[in-house]
Length: 142
Image (cartoon, rainbow, N blue to C red; front, top):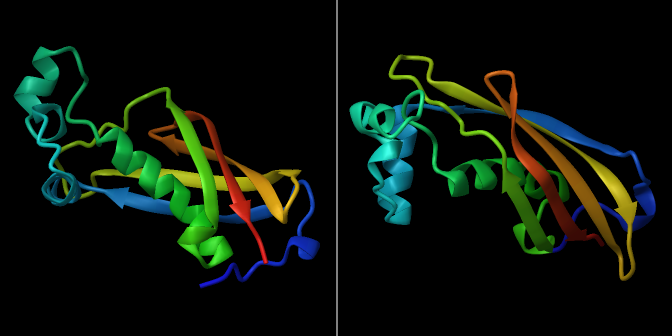
């Protein structure tokens, strides 16, 4: 696949379509199975609270993966992401109810770089708090 977004068509400040990703306890169990990360803070409420967390929390890598979807959906090619990094600032707390939690993600082009690449800065929030800091991706455009 190639990126569907043209380098010539973007400028600093171009906003990517924002998305909201639901997260339930079932989502966390599915992710644990796929990733092999069965740390009890991601599924056992009693254990999570015993270690000082407010409740079960989403896996950091799951949160990171949901956030980059805003970029991959925008560009149309996951392979166009050449660099991606975040700092985890707050956990995504996932209550044991029908609604669970949400991760709200927005992004914008922060810099035009060499070789048809751009830097996209992402903002990920859950429960009214920023959950990822320094969330940045470098993406190669067509």
